Length: 305
Image (cartoon, rainbow, N blue to C red; front, side):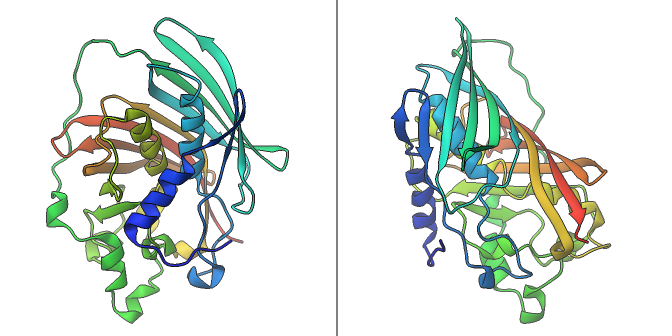
């Protein structure tokens, strides 16, 4: 399956449609997939038929949400076991581990072709008061001071469009608008570094009060360009197109209400890479500086043989 060109709003609406899971029976839901660009549109090759991990995270979170009432997801911990395919739907099996007075736990297994491709533990909590503190947001330019990443990548001179550091994803439409603090193609963007702050905003209108949907959309966004962040300290050493990268495990904590219909700063940074694995941490801040969520992911990152 391949996709025809879509407007930004259509791309976001497609994701909303994919989060409307089909109920097969109790604790069993079916999810459809995003369509991918054909291989000849992906510079340097790529895997056009491979499922995006963020889609599976978002659908698994929604499947878990469909088994609880009046609770908020506060954390999820997931493992990507096998590469999924866009060619067949994903079956989500829910195990109701515990229903407590304050916390409720669910386990989700995503299945394709009779094999588990992903599993995730999800914890929900009642809304209750408590201590409140957080690290401040880093001092970066506001989104209005930056350019859209897709437009910036498309405006690069011909000799820069196939830059060895430029991911094919930078040239494809996404459900979120991205504005990088280090503009694509700039000297700062090309330099070896450990962090990658980017403003993101969902491209379709949503009900800001629907935190269930906001959490699932945030789970999707939390897997965008994460593994590649672990390659940033080595940009002067090797081409992006020579790297094999994949998400291995993923954790997300939601601290405060998620204003998914507004700009969020997705502040990614890598702490270590070794033995073909890279570790990346990130925080999500609202534009008024509130720490909304945090994530950590370890990914496979190796030079192709």
